[in-house]
Every structure is written in C-alpha cells, then in structure tokens.
Image (cartoon, rainbow, N blue to C red; front, side, top):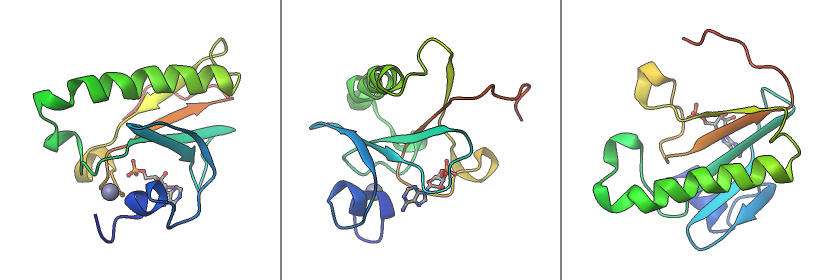
Length: 114
Ligand code: AMP
Ligand code: ZN
C-alpha cells in the first residue's frame, strides 16, 4: 500500500533492521525502542488493524504468534520473559496503521497496564 511505512520496509524500499522474514511475515527492530529488545512483527500483506481481520486471517495471526516465540528465543528472552502487544486505533495507542505485534523484552515490564 502506498504511503504505508511498514509496506515500504517489507518491500525493501525503506531501511530497517530486519531480524526475520518469510512469505507471510516480516520482523524488524523498532526505531524508538522502549526496552532492550523491541521488535515489531507484521504481516507482509497490508492489514490496517485488528479491526480489519477476517476469519481467513486466522492462520496468519497464529503465524504471527509462533514467529514471536521464535524471535524471543533468537533474542535470548524466551526464559526471562517478554510482552506481546497489539495496539488498535486511538484509545489503543496505534500510530502506524499496518497491523503489527510489539515484542518487548530484556527488562521487567511494568504492571498494571492501561
Ligand atoms: P504503534 O503505536 O503500536 O502503532 O507502534 C508503532 C511503532 O512503530 C512505534 O513503536 C514506532 O517507534 C515504530 N516505528 C515507526 N516508524 C518506524 C520505522 N520506520 N522503523 C521502525 N519502527 C518504526
Ligand atoms: Zn502497510
């Protein structure tokens, strides 16, 4: 999709530190990390947010989770722990409207959220 920063990264038209990619998803370091490990995992196909998901995307969303698990292990935070976040629209704090999962780790997360 034109003018989508994550579509440009996925297409190789914008720079990013890519840590994993396959035919369904791409993962890269967040440009403004809020924890020692802060990676974004995104479907290669443009989906604006969780609100646009359909039943046909269920396998893709499952793959997003198993990719997160694989990257957590790769980054050495699987045992210490990590947080997966998907923000949606204004109240969720979404700023980039290409669905993505944040993988945060390497330090203890604050709780409660919200
Ligand atoms: P969200 O607020 O959930 O939409 O998260 C968007 C995230 O994308 C933020 O954490 C930004 O720091 C990150 N971000 C925005 N532009 C880029 C970029 N060009 N490369 C990597 N991360 C980005
Ligand atoms: Zn996009």
